Amino acid sequence: MSDVLDLTRDLIARTSVTPDDAGCQALVAERLEAAGFACEHLRLGEVDNLYATFGDAAAPTLLLLGHTDVVPPGPREAWASDPFVPEIRDGVLYGRGAADMKGSVAAFVVAAERFAAAHPTPAGRLAILLTSDEEGDAIDGVRRVAGLFRERGERLDWCITGEPSSTSELGDLLRVGRRGSLSARLQVNGVQGHVAYPDKARNPVHLALPALAELTARCWDEGYETFPPTSLQVSNIAAGTGANNVIPGTLEVQFNLRFNPTWSADALERECEAVLRAHGLDYTIHWHRSGEPFHTPEGALRQAAREVLSAHRGQPPEESTGGGTSDARFIAPLGTQCIEIGPVNASIHQVDEHVRVSDLQALPDLYLSLIEKMLVPSDGL
Image 1 (cartoon, rainbow, N blue to C red):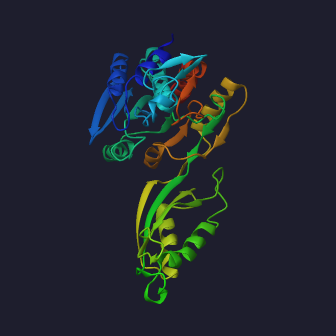
Image 2: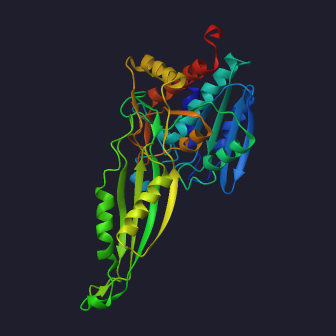
């Protein structure tokens, strides 16, 4: 068995359903401290965060970003084996978190150990940040740690997030940005009444539909570089008392915008509310900003990642900004260039989540090659 496989299995065996870390970070910290890393434990609310560093704080810094929490397994009887008892079948490792993202965390640790052993006095600094709040509310995890970093002037030049980004083969996709995510809970107010006397009521459903139709039909933009166009999707609508002869007094609508760097959350909020006002609605709205979009332009980090992944697969990766959000959205505003490289994402959050053992064993070498390209001068290799 390899170091990365053993460590991944040890991490899967800890039932770290968000926000419970279940001892994962203590296990990681013990290994990193033995390798020469300084470890800082940041317990914020109910969330555990681990920040480990190796090298001079004033030097260019590469951050490896990950999370130790996992989503709930769902019905355990639906799994072919216990989700928290890792099992290998036909060259595939099964268990909750195998792909998202305990395999990447284990690969980070093994790569970091090898880097520290080979480069005891590196020209750059290697850092690892782990949280137990990525799959949950994402309030007391990287979002809050990033605020602490900003306050104390922590230097973070580049970031590699270990999210499962590959589509069918390890390294076939390089994530170079993510869309922003903005959610709204809208309440439109009317006047409840009898359906036979609509003149004595104001139906909020009827009032809101034209505004919602305008928002959902709008072409917000044509996309931005490799980003798809901004999209607004209604996710929930609720109104009424349950009786078919009562005009409801209120309508509640939830919708989400996934947006590219053409927009900011501020601008989108203003645009949406302008439409609601133009239709004369009596409304209240609560906005939740999950994160602004980020994009890493062409430069040293993207070039290094392209070279490493091309060498691994024999062809360049697709460079994409698709998908949902990741904790990199909190690191990018610090002025950090961010990319995402990780295992195949086909089974994440599903029953029988898994990762190929061969992919898992290849990950530490990929990460180590990237670390050395960024932190070790070419004449020092």
